[in-house]
Picture 1 (cartoon, rainbow, N blue to C red):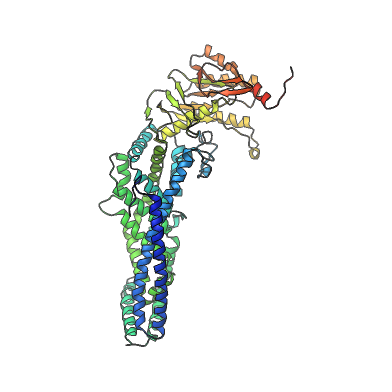
Picture 2 (cartoon, rainbow, N blue to C red):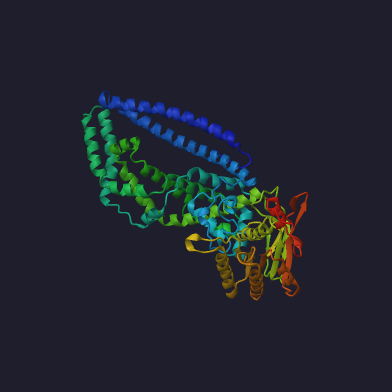
Amino acid sequence: MEFEYGITDIKDSLKRCKRKGFGLATARFFLFLFMIASLIIGLSDKPVFILAFLISSILFVYLIIQYNTNKDWIDFFSQLIEMEKEREKRKSRNLKDLDSGSEYIDKLHPYSNDLDLFGVHSLFQLINHTVSKSGKSLLAEWMKCNINPDKAKEKAEAIEELRPNKSFLASFEAHGRAFMKNEKPKTKFYAWLKQNEKWNAIYYLPLLIGPIGGILIIFAAVFELIAPAWVGAWIIAGLFFLSMIFHNLQQASSIMPNQGDIKTFSKWASQIAAMRFEGDYLNHLQKPFKNQDYDASAILNSLEQKSFMLQNRFNLMYLIFNMLFWIDFFLFWRTVKWKMRFAKHLAEWEGYFDVWQSLVSLAAFSNEENLNCQVDWTSEKILETKNLVHPLLNPKDAVGNDFTLAEKTKIVLLTGSNMSGKTTFMRTVGINLVLANLGLCPFASAFRTGSFQLFTSMRNTDNLGESVSSFYAELARIKQLLTMAENGEQVLFLLDEILKGTNTVDRIMGSESLIRQLANSNCKGIISTHDIELSQLENTLDYLENKSFHSEIADNEIHFDYKIKEGPCPSFNAHKLMELMGIKFSE
């Protein structure tokens, strides 16, 4: 069975797989009843039925393999349907049921907390298509890392090459979601891989005697050449020999990754190796899985088979065959041989799979949002955007803005009435710069930027546990920015309602001093304020520009257009808002 994005009827394929699964389960059930009857009759009355039991056992194993393969397809198609449902949720910005990545929230980070990168209704919910814990962590790390144009361009090239391969993107994610459901920590497994496994030469004796002797004993009992009691004696002897390697296999079974994890890696390795890439970065990431010396997919598939057998050694069918043919020795021998040849690759491969998961996430996100604005990275200290919108707003409601932070401009002083869009606009600038750093297209029609480190100060709250007031928290945040400025870093800062926790006189004096101090550094950015008095600085400071958001009051209602305008805000609406909320002012 094959899957091709946009061509395969997923729902119809799922129905057919379910019908096939029911048929296989029914056949397996009746065959199992026949096997039990054959074994009972063979041991108690007619030994020839033991032969019928063995033949039917082989057919039973075949049906199990077919059933499990069909079940994998059911899980795969089911996840494709779930992915489509999540795609619709992201499209309408209904993100509440998606993984929030809240464990990555860091209030001390230069910008992630203020820009809603993680948490409820966050960028992470919009972008994330990873399935493993380590892949998810790597994507979060990429979202929080320093601005680096070279790495951003490298990712951008890879993303644009992956985007047309929609079948690859959908299959990659669906396979991971289908099989990697209960991920198991692999620390102990990787430690076990580094340990030398002991294969004693004496083990070759039961390895050979077990299957040969078992076959001879069974045939002798079937044709009544020996008494059936000898089969019991053979099993008792087998228990003695099997105890020699019981501990080794039990240890391997306990630390072996879940079968679903290994199956996912095997599917991923096969998919990656089958692709043809042009870019250097993707070819570099493909190389470990497309090596002339080994087949990564085959190696992982072999590990999956061994993991399945190790973790199902106490299954009734395995126990019966193990007691008759001592197959634990064959399993142990194959495990030691595999470990000696391929163990060194496993930990390295998982790291590569994490990168692939992150890139697949970014490419899938780009396709879902139909992004096409390429970032123009420049050596100039500028930021120029056209029709810039916030990615977390519903596209139907989002209002685009043009914005320029010129080379000569150090500070844009942003004034405006309450709820007019100042804070949202600053977050729009910041979060789109994060997208650009990820190699993604910003939500804009044009985006040109210099190489800035991003810094924000917006959500500064008090902390009762640490006896920290919101004003002190903001001062600590500003101190962090000043330290970056003193170190000569080229920073783009976004400061919302600066020094709002103190009185008007001190706030205006402190704000003006901070503006002058930052202007003498490599930093530049946007400062929003309700202190319209600060807008007068434009008359004396040639590096400061005034921009604003406005509101209009008509028919006892306040209207906003959410468009940024030149110059300071001419009027504010706090008085009217308070009236609308029931506060009565004396005349």
